[in-house]
Image (cartoon, rainbow, N blue to C red; front, side, top):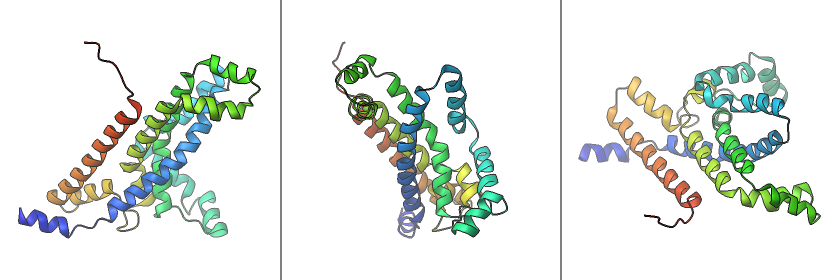
Length: 233
């Protein structure tokens, strides 16, 4: 027991802070991009909607390493776009915290987008027609009618997006690497402790931390989106 406490005290907590920061920033980006994309897709025709929806949902069904491969093709310093960002704008993505954010955002985005779209599709069209009858603009209807009505689904999407971004591993490892104190997240720390060091105690502590966070996220989602229901039994 004492040995476990000593390990706990000497633990480097930077992976937790890096994961939390990455999760928060990625969730904010995915939140606004997901709402914008969901609203735009619903305005398209059925064929265009099917194609664009498939493209936006693709990171959800692809292995994260495949997404990481494509991100490397885009942002690597050996590629035109990545080289331009670095030499002309001073922006480096590979092996940086920015890479963590981009990788986590790409992987987590479909959760926000799909939940937002599903929530928008459940909005009663009569409310939208009523808003138009009252002379409200489309922007006002979206802000004052659609968003409040779709709130449970949007909140659920944001919480799931944060959870996914917090635990992202594959794409993050390929794009941002595993640099201690810089890009090393909790997931990477667990993998390193097991694969490289065979340190099951340290890995177990981080697994416990992740499980506590995940449990808190699920409880928060249930509290914010569950609503009050009458007992029927």
